[in-house]
Image (cartoon, rainbow over all chains, first blue to last red; front, side):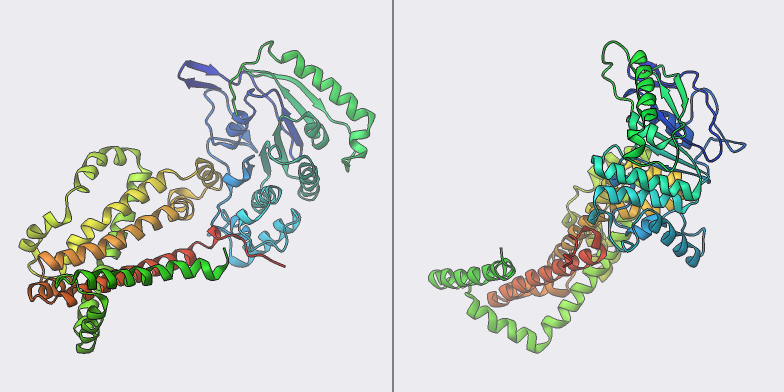
Length: 254
Length: 254
């Protein structure tokens, strides 16, 4: 993946090749500016890679595929402020499903993220964490086979982040969709994923691809107190430090 | 501020101004500047004979027609300008030229085409009122959050869906500002056209009263037109609030 910029072409992603199994929860982590967001935008079909291909369930991705959903970090920009919570969730279902099916899916999705009873609220009247729950509900209301998440919890405070991580694990436990979650938070990656992929600084390549063998269901206290968690954390952290360039590059890729 | 004083003061000020008018006009004693206690009887007389009512209906009907016409044309044009970059670039020079032509300068030309008719009033007023709608719609549409447009692509809403479900509602606050300006301009230009060209409605009555040296009536019409403007502005604001409930602060729930 190469970008044309004012200073000529800038290569962001190089020889990045990986496969995600159906129903797998993969977390992608790496130093800031390493192209995590670019990767996700390519995977979602929003951005056409300058080289290479993306395949999703036997189909080449050139446009956003119907069985994929993406959750952005900036929930307040990704929600329509003039639509109520329920109508935001239904945004992509209108005209595709009957009224009854639409209402049923909305209700299920909102219940799953813990927002039952907030159907008629406007996003601006909700807290950040609740707005992000709305975005997750919108994604799962589509019943996507693949859920992409771009640093979904990065703008939330620590406690809210933990609660949403657990909500996401609950949702995944019930629906078992494939999840690719990008984060800069190593603890979050290890806590959530079946597998953690570590990216290098640009031109980005994969420097580690580690299976997370922590038992499920996971628990914010017990899992993070597990010696194996600390061990994985240390192992992955060392890999990141190895690839971190000596001086700060200063350009933000996300 | 408590609710009562918040509303009381803006309403009290016109009464204070009227009192000041009374004092100054009496002190000066000019025929051309009668005090309110001579204007009010003239107003009642016009109301009783039905002259005021007939002419108000005529003028308001043209104002509303011009406003609706400029609204439809303005939103459609603004949408094209805001959505399609080349249209914006190509139209900029022409828009800046056309919108600075004084509507009054058009009156003789339009009279040649449509005669002393309602159509002339309508065309001149709609011409004058269309610009704020075009410009506000254009900038509102151009400023739609890019993230929201990406959401539209991911949900595969299609171009018409994106415009209808995301772009127009996003631009609605800006469009409302344009429509409010255009309503005021419609009233001003319709009255002006009636004063200098088309012998009908409130503007013509105003000029006739002046020619008949009935200054009490002139002021009665001037104050009445001002009140019509106030009424239209209040109605527009009220409608705007009803149409955009998400811009209101959340209802406090005990």
